[in-house]
Length: 217
Length: 217
DNA sequence: CAACTATTCAACTTATTAGTTGAATTATAA
DNA sequence: TTATAATTCAACTAATAAGTTGAATAGTTG
Image (cartoon, rainbow over all chains, first blue to last red; front, side, top):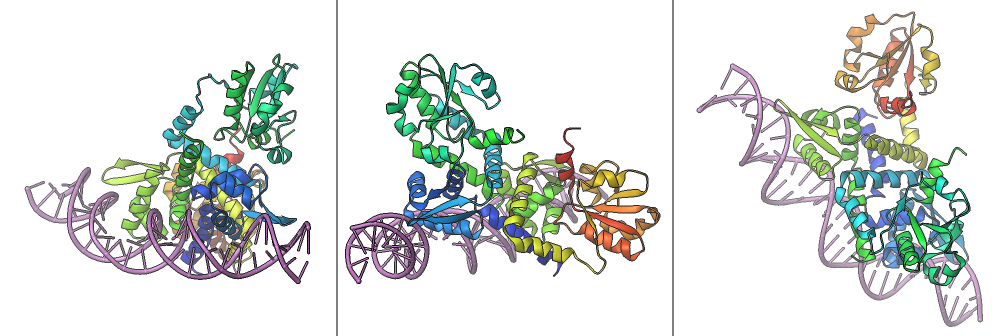
């Protein structure tokens, strides 16, 4: 094997894996799967794609070995093969925000709502949680909560916030988090909580961010 | 702005950055630039592309803001905008090797040569360097050495190894490194040194790997 | 200024990709 | 076994990307 042939071979493979991230919808699929395993149907609904097209994307992700699936009843449940994919997703997101300022601005703009929302970073969390006067809530779908959550967090899916709000005490500060800074569930939750007279904060971090920082303990 | 519209906007941008990595030649360009800034001509030669095509790829990298350039005389020198790009490159390489076994096998196969070569990992390095009986050599082009190298390493570009070999003592163990495990310069160097009767080892790591491990000191 | 060099642009061909729709497959449950 | 629900396949269209060649531009040096 010639040197050039060898290089072409390996760079072809590197780029094949990179291609998995290079379509907006496929990136979104991987991002959703980084929260928890999901069925084709759920993925199609969340990404606003046809089921057929979702399936096709999943096939291509299978081919580049970034996802696997398991069967359960007559559902096929897809999941990421490796946690390092989450790291790659978040490095690319971070790079995008630093290099393409418009993305950061759009996000901040989209998140700023009539009620001023105060955002905490993951480093602030421990000090906030000290003392019993705060409550941490995870507003993602319950499946994602079950697949992994920040210790001490209570599951209140955004879809059920209205019904479950009474379980939260107005004497406590409420901290809401969701899939990460590019997901709007937590923003919506904080907005609603403030409207209802709660003291609420946004945690701008994902479970994955939390894990990365706390992997040593 | 609607929720779907917002998602489409940000995922479009994430994928735009990812697209930079998704062509084999562009990945190779980024990989070369991760070693040191380079001119269009050098990049074209190293990747076996026409200058026009190289330029076009560089334009697209400029557009996705992964590279910048500076002018020097009538040369245009491209460089990466951010060190985090190196991290992304190496995560993708690592993921590719774990998921696509054929890549790892091909690399190991390509590297195995008539002379059995012993490969050291970056963690082994400090113990090997203790005592004055080893010599660490950097066999990349001198420009890349100048842009950054492992402390204590001596620059002996692979192209000049024949002439410079006399500067190495046969009483010392020689450790050679290059751009990383997917670059063959160090392998070729070790092979040649062994033929000439030296005790030589391959360091399977890049300067970037070294920096990552030693960033705290 | 003229000659030269490095780089980019423009026009074009070929190949690849995203997405649609409707039919086919597969597994479960009645 | 049949009906049903989940998923995939196949055929097609429209859009995008990679690469080639040759001309254009811009900056340097004699």
